[in-house]
Image 1: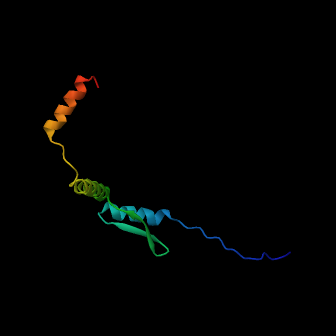
Image 2: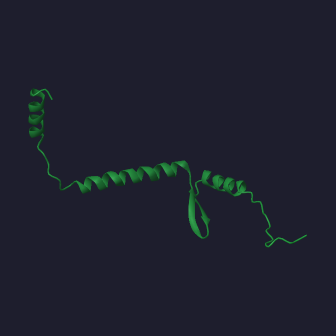
Image 3: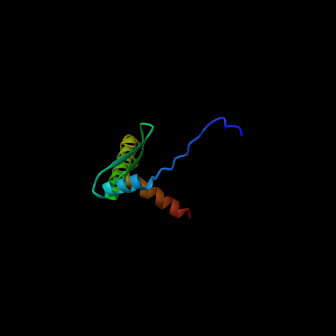
Length: 92
């Protein structure tokens, strides 16, 4: 009988235990970074912290839009009302 060209060994890894441990740590307020090949791939964190981070990102986006539009031309409210009345009179 001929030998295979490569001798491969298989290994089974139980990934549930480390993930469960990371979840337990997050439940106690810790932020857990999972790495693969020395690069951060996943972050496990308490849901309250994730919600706060997402809210902060939303607020930062709103502030960015406000700053971006700071120099846009402003239309006086009286002019807007007058234009709306004209459109309404035309049936639009």
